[in-house]
Length: 423
Image (cartoon, rainbow, N blue to C red; front, side, top):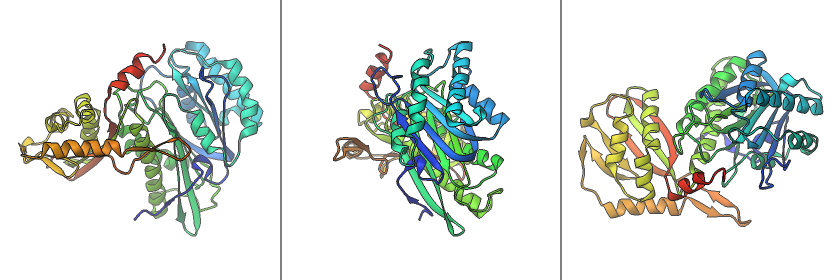
C-alpha cells in the first residue's frame, strides 16, 4: 500500500506555491498560452533536458541558470512558439522574457526559469508575451494550478496534472506536477514539458539526483512516435515550506520522498503516452528476467516504441511475433529459448515456443481496453483512464532485472494530425 494519497491542487498543492495561466495571444486558436509557477520563497531547483543538438533557446538558458545557481523562484512557460532553431535572436528573446518577468515580480532574473512549446523555427511573439506578463502575475494564486496546466498544452486533448501528500516525521509533505505532450514523444531525458513542485527541504545535489532517477523511470520510458523534441524540459522546485527537517542523504525520509516523486512523474508520463496523437489506448510493457533494471527498461522501451507493435495493437491483432522481434533487437543479449510473452492474461509464447491461444479472445481483450480507456465527464471534458492499460509482459529468463515502459497505439489519425501540423 502506498505511503501517500492523491490530493487536489497539482502544482499549487505544496505550500508556498502559486500558479496562473492566461491567454496572451501566442496561439492562433485563442486558447490559453502563457503559464506561471511561482514559489513565494527561494526554492531548490533541478532540471533534466533534451539531449538533442538542436535545442530551444529556453533549454540552454535553463541549463546555464541551474549551473550558475541551483535555485529559482519562478517558471514561465509559453505555448505557441518553440523558440527553437531561432539563432541569436531567439537567445535574446529568452533573456528579455526572463528579465521582464523578474521585473514584474521584483526578483533577480537568475531566479527565473523558462520553457516553450510550439512550432520549431518560430520566434516568440514578444509583443504579446511581454504584454501578458503583468496580467499573468496578477492572476497567480494558490488555486491557479489547473489554469497553468491548460496554458502549457498544444495538440494535447487533455491536461496532465496530479498532487500527492505523505507524512515525513509528523508533518505533511506534498509534491505536485503538471505536464504536456502528445506528439514528438520519445524522450532522451524527460518529456516535452514537465513541472514539479514540492514543499520538502532537500539539498541541491540530492534533489537533482532524485529527479534524474525519477525521469529514468518515467519520462524516459514513454514513447508515442519515436521523435525526440528540441524543447524537452523537466524542472522541479522544492521550497522547504513544509518545515520538515532538511533531507541531505538517502535515509528513510529521502527514500520516501523519492518514491513519491517517481509516482508523480510516472503518472504524468503515462498520461502523456495515453494522450498520444491519434491514440486509442495506453500500452504498458513490463519486462522481467533481464540482466539488470537498465537492460529491462531498454527492452521495454523498444517494444513500446515499435511501429509494428503499435500498429498491430491499433488493429487489435495479437501478433506476438512483433513483440518478440522488438525485444530481440533491443540490444540486450538473452537466450530466445527462455523467452516468454503475455498479452494481458493470455500466454502467447513460452520457453521460446509459440503457443496455441484463443485469437478471438485476445483481440477482444484489446478492443475492451480501448473501449474503456476514456470517457466523458459531466462537464463534457474528456477523461482518460490510466489504471487499466493494455498490458504486455515479456520475460527474458536471464536475470532479476525489471523495467516498465509506456506507449500508445499508432492510428490513422496520427498521420493526419502531423501531415497538417503547420498548415
